[in-house]
Image (cartoon, rainbow, N blue to C red; front, side, top):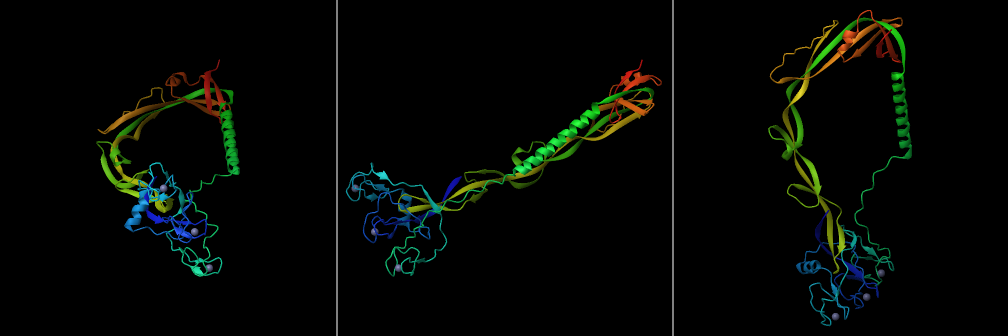
Length: 362
Ligand SMILES: [Zn+2]
Ligand SMILES: [Zn+2]
Ligand SMILES: [Zn+2]
């Protein structure tokens, strides 16, 4: 995340002696003159206005104030010697800074009602204009920085139990299926005739469209249409990147001012393109079949952009038995020579009435 500064606002502090609200850069209480204590916490005013005054802006940007380690006076960050006692400030303690104070308050603030007399006061009034009572609200808790997104809801335990039950049922069905397929019974049959089928697959060079980032489109292809698409999200700004920022919030600068910042990330869009290449695609097959004992391969006529792409062969021996007719198929051409019509065979037949194996009967 990149931190983006929106500018600076003036914070305020409450005098622990007389409860007067003082502007952040004010080093002694406007009301009672008490010096601002070392450990004072700066607070957000009810309404934060971005500073435009050049002199104030310079102070705000200077960094945390330095406390003189001799007399405790608060000096601006740029000071080399204490304005009060003249001591060298290189050993002085810098005010703490960098704490998130709360979400940036850029909305107009409501007037404050005096808790003592009920009079309406300006949001930044140090004290009640009518009776002089302090206008500090006890519940001036700092608000939290922008909330984090809530984690996605996880599915309940019932859903996972359901999934387990479904998985078990599928498992049981698969096991039953395997058992039925492998459990066989033997019966005797007589070979009656044969059949065969030989197939040659045909491929052709065809235009095929793919998609890729423009810089990853392979050479020697035809570029089609392109459109911008989110490629990555990064911390640093980039040309053509879309800036996505969170809620602005105020950070203590340690000088009575606060810096209003936003956490931003940058969505980089790049061209995502269609491109076309020529690739071998299965387009057709040539099939030859017969019921004789001399199988042939089909000889397809291929065009210039076609090629043969693999062969398949299937041979079937047909049997008759008391309980009906059966057939046994194999990719082995030797099945044709073995399947002499009238020869007797022991057939292994599974629960689906399919022949899983044959052997000559004695
Ligand atoms: Zn005071
Ligand atoms: Zn000093
Ligand atoms: Zn009052």
